[in-house]
Length: 115
Figure 1 (cartoon, rainbow, N blue to C red):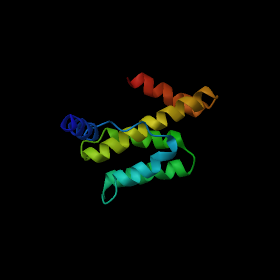
Figure 2 (figure 1 turned 120 degrees about the horizontal axis):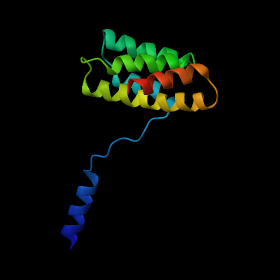
Figure 3 (figure 1 turned 180 degrees about the vertical axis):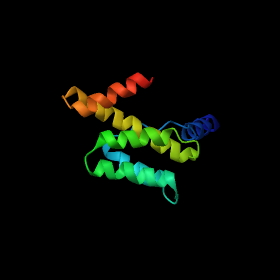
C-alpha cells in the first residue's frame, strides 16, 4: 500500500500542466524572461511591445505581438511568451472596447476579421 501511495505522489508531481493565463500586468516580465539573452529583430520587437505597455498603449503592444507571432524564427520559449502575452492583451483590449475605447474596438474588430 505504501508503494502505491509513493507512486501516486510521484505521478502527481510529474504532471505537465499548462501555465494559467497571464494578466496584462504580467506581459512585460513574461516578454523579458522569454527573450532574455536573445538579440536581433525578435528581441527588438519584444522590447517594442514592452515599451508600448509602459506607455499605456496596449493597442500598439498587441499589434507588435501579433507581428511577433507570425515569425518563424522564434524559439519555442519565445513563441510561448509572445502568444501568451498577446492573449492577455486581447482580453485587455476586449475590456477596453466594452468600456468605449474606440482604438481598442478597432483592434478587436481587426482581430476578429483575421480569424
